[in-house]
Image 1 (cartoon, rainbow, N blue to C red):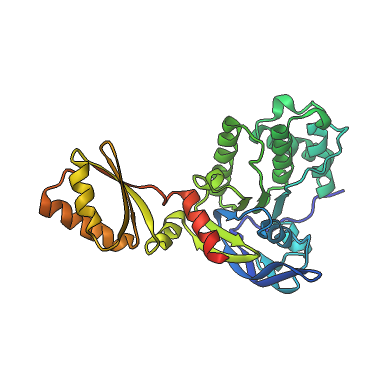
Image 2: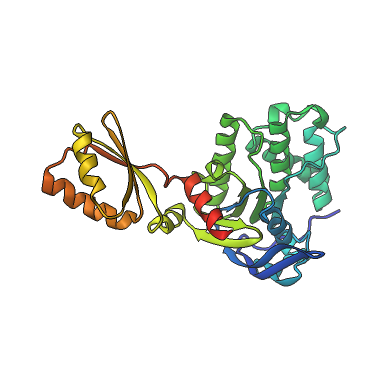
Length: 316
């Protein structure tokens, strides 16, 4: 068997064009338009939000009820699109009696490589995911983290230009997660387009250049984490200020029109403001006018998980 022709190594874009998918009377995803280009994009949402449906539409396992899904300009269900694609599903589907090495080599042979080339590519992929010295273990006896690495290895053997990784970090220890993240960054630096799904923003916030957030089958936000954080500018926030004169500062801050709550604990003043943008301006003027001691100001609920939670709540 000979290897299929592979398109030239060029940047590949994944495009969802007004995509809707019905499961009988139930809507899996609803009118999603999204472009995913080179680099690492995180696909975020709670369990059941529509992430896996989008991944399966992208790899051609599902056909959209409405709209189009394109990989490198090709329909996602076409052979041309599948030659560009490496897919790592969220569920395991192994030949459990095989060793990791045998499984990866078998998948590579099924792709179309002759035996010698398949073995060479298998060893290279196992090395990249850190499984060379453990690949002779039978899959039935492998840990969850090891199985995740084997899945990722078989995804890489045919030099795909676009990777679809459905919850790839689940069950991997912190050290292994760091190694996988380093590998994905290296692949992104080589020009690959990588879409990583997760229901935990903390898993991918340091990894992904861009984020797409889905909830109840809809795309509710996309952009960098910084851009998504700015969506909180007009939302109530909790702020902590450290000051040697906490009681005086609290009394003055309580007089600001947008302050709704103030609490004092030692040198910390924790407050709730209804309009963060206006508060920051007024607080700065207050500090200067009254020569207040304000050593540190910290926003408590603008972290990644808070942003994620706010976006999900706003979609309901």
